[in-house]
Image (cartoon, rainbow, N blue to C red; front, side, top):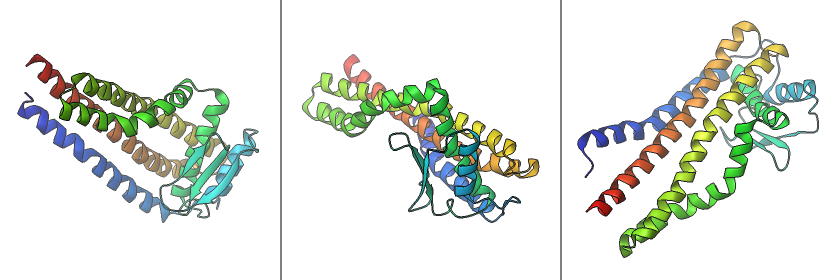
Length: 227
């Protein structure tokens, strides 16, 4: 039986992603209106940092949407969203530098990033199979199947936890790169930190929700076994 304190915590944790998303949007919008003194666009900032680090072979392309920025390690290509690629705001260069941070991690063989890459295949499978297996196990009263689903779901939780140091480290590298390259001044770096910290909160919220969901599944099916 799950007591009321769990449900209160569950509700609070469930609200976190909404709050984190709104905070990120507000912070990004705020610094999207502040032009960088250097005049670098997101694409130019990313290119400069890559060249300084002898990584000029990495491609950069515009992608549709907002907050769709990413680094594709297979294609060796950075995708920058429409609100980042061609704009010269503090928000744009900060996000672009963060994606370059992932490239720097890969070049340095950053352990957490290597682990995340290894977890990715099983996590993709778990994302699609875990919950259906749990429900199928519940419907058929086949507890073994439900527990297999829970174990699979634990991989998605582990992936979200491993993602945290990867994202925080990429942001740390971004701030250092923006400073050393002269793309942002010391005063502008405070704004960049605000943007990247707000982005990091979305990953923290996601990890918290995943852990809470895993705990809920364990409590439900663990309680059934005890019964």
